[in-house]
Structure formats: C-alpha cells, structure tokens
Image (cartoon, rainbow, N blue to C red; front, side, top):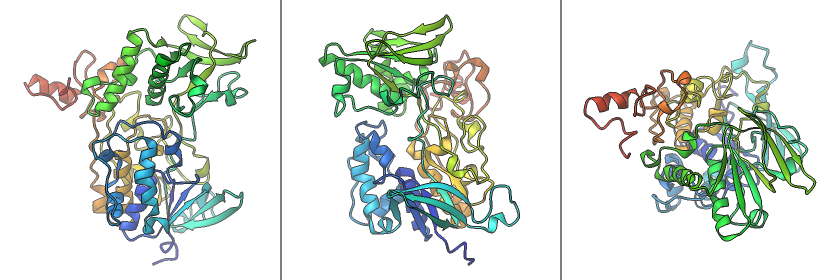
Length: 465
C-alpha cells in the first residue's frame, strides 16, 4: 500500500448526503475524515428547520446510516410521517454524528476553502494521479491548516450560494446595496419571524418549492392578520412545474403543495405576476421597496412592498476546486455526465436514470461531486438520489467495481408531463419512463403512451390521475 493509499478519504459537508457517504466509507473499512463548515452537522438543513419536507422519514434515511444507528439502539421515527428539517437533524443527523464511529471522524467548524493535488497546479499532467489531495481548512478561530487525503467526496451542497434577484443570473440594479433588506432563504413566517411579515406586504420571487412554502405560509398568516398581503412574481409563463402533477404525483405531499398553490391563485387569494423578469430594486420616499421588471409589454413597476423573499434557487460554489481538473456541464454546472440526464429545459417528470461513481467523477481521479451539488443548478434533487450516489462512490473507492456499477435508483414521479414543456425542447431523453411525450399526448412519456394504446394502465405517471 502506497503512502497516498494510507491517507483518509475526505468528505466535505456534514449534511444528510455527506454523513451517508462517511457511513458507507466506514462500512467499507476505509479511513475517513468529514469536514463541516457549520457549528453542527446539518447546518444548512437547520437553516430551514421549520419547513416540513414532502418525503417521509423512510425516504430521508440512508440504509447504511440506519444500520450504524440501529447498532447503537436507535429507532426510526414513524416511517410514514413527514419530518421538518429540524426534526431530521434532532432525530437522525445529530444522533448519527454522535455514534462513536462518526464522532471520531467528524470535524465541525472546519471549512474547506481550497483543494489541489499536492505540489501541483491544474496545468501539470505528469504524475498527477499519484499525488494526494491537499486541502486548505479554516477553523472558526480564523486559523488555517493543510491536510491531505487519498480521495475527496464533495457533498458541500448549494444552500449557501443563493441565486440573485436579478432574472439574468446577475444581481438586479440596486440589489447589492439593498442585500441586507432582502431574504435569500425560507423565512419562518409562522414562527420566530412572524412579526416581520404580519400586517405587511411581501413579494416572493421564484417558482420552486421554496417559493411555494413561503407563499402558503404567508397566505395562512394573512388569514389571521389584517393588512398582510402577498404578491408572487415569476419569470416564466407556464407554472406547471411548481403547480406539479397533483394527484398523479407519487409523493402526495409534493402534489398537495402545488395543488394548494394553484387553488390560492385561482381563488384570488394570492396575487400573481407572470412573465416578470426582475431588473431593479429601489427604495421609495416611505422606505418601502420598489421592484421593476421586464415583461413582454415592456417595463413594469410593482406596487411598493415591505419585504422581498428571494426564492430563485441556488448554484454550486466551485471556487474551492479552482486548481483541480473538473468536467462540468457548461450551463447547469453539474457533473458533465449528469447534465443531459437532468437538464430542466428538457426534463419535467422529476426522475433521473440510475447513476453512480462514473457519472460523478472528474478528470482528477479520486475526486467526486455528490448530492445536490452534483446537480448544479438543476432543481430536482432528492435525498434518495444522493444516498445511491455515495453508496456507489464508496464501493468504487474500496475497489468493488461490481457493486459500484450496480446502481439502482427508483424515484417517485411528479406526475408532470414532458408535453407541458415548449415543443422546442422536447428531445429524446430517459428523464421520464424512457422518453418525452409527443406534444399532443396526454401521457408522461412515450412508454406511457404506448402502454395506454395497448390497453394497459401506462408506466405509472398517470395511474393516480
């Protein structure tokens, strides 16, 4: 065994996927060290701890992590219940990190700021694969140190890299100066931040599940607090993604979320502005926020608001890997091999073909991007995906390529048909039961349509409709 092979595998990020990666690596008998920038594991998850997820306890727990926990007497909460982010931390991640095996390898308050090959920048090719990885790690006290690893599993996520309010991917005019007055996360509207929103007018910008949760909470707040108003602005025109597949969604809680949102809009309880691309934010004479955007009809200025919730998604931070050789999808910033499988310009059914270590690796051998960061800017990641990813990566690092290549991923369909996307992006893909549906078809995909034509129920996307 070489000196490099004696080094630990470095796992960056102490969220659900990072901890699962460490559990799988330990089960394979590998030396591991996990770095978490926050004060506790699951720090990003705790930032939205008040939010109840739309997947059950059983769907949120990794199999190997569960085996480790149960070996110490842990019992899963009610498997079909829907936990909040804080409950996931308290009843799963915190006890997992506290097991003797994990406690020995987890470093909190340890932020990895840069990674390279020891003694080599990214230009040098000769001997690259024989060098260890060098990590620069900052502690909470401001000190910095160098550590080395035989391989790196980057599960650092995207939560701390929020997209801007500006529709073009850049900050809107005035956004940077007013950043402290904008909310770039999921506010606890019905809890500790209630006073910030009650009796005020709030603008929510974005068309994902973070926006949906914030909007539903704000409407609920308005029912008991006169003067509370909500306006929702989205860049697109077609809201099928956020409204979801309703009863056809194989995650009922997710389908219900979109269904309630649609109902609020149609009943006039939620003001919606579609086709609105934010270009500027300013402050008026009364210290209220004024948002201007571009529409097909020209510039539009919205009525003044007191608060703005920026729910425009997240993006990965690749600054720490600037001296590594990575292959990234040119627009999603996901791992390159994953890009065509998850491109939201094409896929809308919320599924992805099975994938593992091969799709998550990079030209710098031994470096893997996993979890939501592996999806880049694509918004359809589920924890089930990440758990299968790290199982495969751990097997590959242990030299068990048969297990590493035996990837099996079954995700619950959203019930949203590819036919709802613009025809220009309906290209052949495996994103939904094997391919997209013809524009005029009432089916999730070609396989579904063919099954219906044969008198069968289809591939499952329409079964609950």
